[in-house]
Length: 292
Length: 302
Image 1 (cartoon, rainbow over the protein chains, first blue to last red):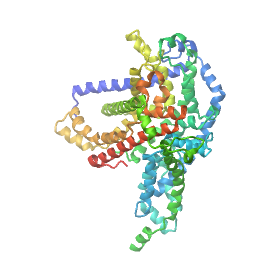
Image 2: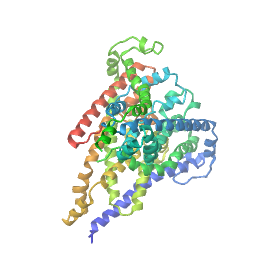
Image 3: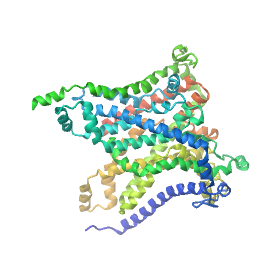
Image 4: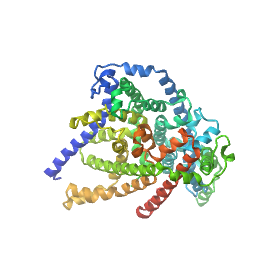
């Protein structure tokens, strides 16, 4: 039925080759750092490791896993993750459910929506927030990592749009049967919104795992850092040769496999949730209202 | 029936107020109160005296900020880096999305999307670690450079190359996400349009030019408008993790300067003033771009 011209066939072949090449580059980046992490310090430092480890050894991985700091910072990360995500979920419901009602059912809706949205537009900036957290005596506590980002506005909007799609008739029926707003929310809307909760929860998890800057400014001692902040501290010490003199000094060359081992440990949790995350990205985007 | 409808309308909302209350408390405590903290930009703030006790000095800090020799440089850097990042990310995303959507093999399209999107979820501490390793003088990038010339390139030490490094690694991290949005716009195009174009004898290239491109244009405009608001956000995380004093001239941005002023030098008032300057520019841009989106695209972003 369809006539496909020769030039289009050639074009398709090139398109396949081009896309495949670009994707291979991305894959090779990750293969390369894995290869470095699994190589001996000598060949890695001499920059002869490509995509396969040379003098294969798990020494660097074992050394990284054996680092007592990694245990502590991993534990800190898990702590902020559980507390922070649980707090995020409660806050998201608190914002999304009432704001999903239209103005005729909840006359104050637009006022509250404005209060929430204004925080997306204005902020006092880094320093005032820091001074305030300090004044509240929250420095060096997990709450400094949980509370300032407690209400993730973008995710609230995603969840709110999902609640909006639930037909109001269901609620009206429940109300006529004597259910209060709170009962309807707990018994009907939240169970119906399970897919949306999966989406926003995954994003909240990623946000908490990836945050490193708050740990850096609110935590005074590295033993309180989350893992991402600890990783940043290690990277700061990483060898970045910037001039001829640096090459001659060969600073920290032996550290290379170890550094990549730390980096890979930071990637693993994201790689594990990625298949689920990816599935939700599309739906999350649509729900969030970024559409044509 | 009418009676029930009316009763539903008049249904008491006190529980809804109760449900929204916890979030309001958190927002007031951690967003609204810190907003008032900007007063320290107008004070000679001394941590021992606090917000109330520090003497007011008006716009003195702003005047000082604008006379700082590197302030202009930092603003220009932020703008240039942000514009380059926005332009190249969008361009890459659109080209890749159009090419991938032409391909037949479902598994190939799916895996290409999966691979492209993955770096988006990695934080800059991870990608910074990777890119510093790859772009250092003894890294993989320079192994390739040395196939062509014997001189190594100091990606992380040469001001010119540092910008190339910033923009290209940022595009690599983020284009996958924009691509997913473009794909969503592509699937929203009515297939009947293509069929009738085919009937009229339009070849694939003409179909793309006259149906696909106009079809995704509103989405692209919307993304552009949204990006305008963040035009002074040149990517704090990336720059902070990868920069060093050698590349301040081309890579230092407003946010990194705020960090150094506030947290390394303890000049709280000055750092806040710089932050306010950035917020004002960002606010003006986001409101005008929102207004433009509403006027030209009929889409309310905010």
